[in-house]
View 1 (cartoon, one colour):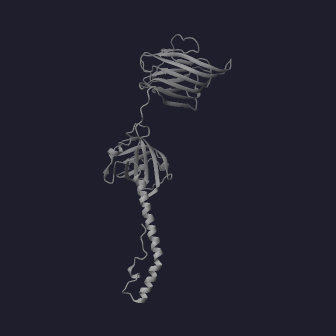
View 2 (cartoon, helix red, strand yellow):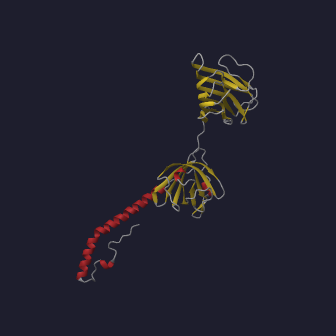
View 3 (tube, helix red, strand yellow):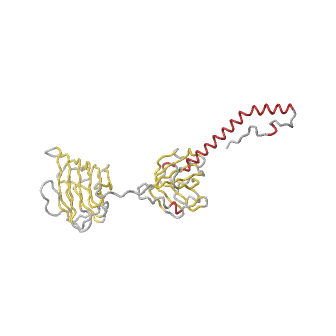
Length: 348
């Protein structure tokens, strides 16, 4: 706070005990200093209004507020009583925030351990503000919380900041936390994206061996531009308990007629070509009897007759346990390119 100095010295102000010359001089001085006094009072009022404004901004920070002292050390260890640290020297690149469990003599363990209670993927938002200077701040999304002894590691993503590294070692900070609401229930029959994969370099297979669960009994697998490195047939094997089943429990799929005999895999398409689009449905995956598999879509045929060709096929898997996932591969060679997305249809 800037002090007021104008017209504060009684020896420079007029009073009745002074001789006429001193009285006149002090009176003239007082009149001259009135504008300076007003300037200083206005400056003080502006500082007070700024403090009120900062206090209002800080008070609006969120449901929880904890004071901390910033520590620039980035190692994974207890920051020390009342301290907070980040996992990167470039503060807005940090992916972990480390909080001591005590601050200003208070134990905040129970409070901090509620930070990840939301069932949403983003548990809540965190705002760090330097005390006394609200122009220095950072905001984060919190996605997970770990509980090492004596402190907590918060998995975070920086969403914005006043600078790349706004805080200095020893800065007094306020941490504000606002919890997100719980995730809503998925509607029965709704389609939920469970996972995806993009092939950027040649791979032998694409595995989703443990992506199925009891929450879904039908799965829709979208294949986009799945291309072989060389001419080959596209095949699928199903997994049980996370392991691929290579037994002869499959019926081959065909573009016409019915498939016969047993096989060690499902042929999604037996001719060679450059696949453009295909949707594969896996039905009754939670059964220990028969799991149906269907394929529908089209591909760009590369052998005579050249041109787009439809794919419509049905077949299945005669397993003895629920199916946990699948593997895609070609009968020979690698998968050169492609995108796979896996959706589940919600059970009742």
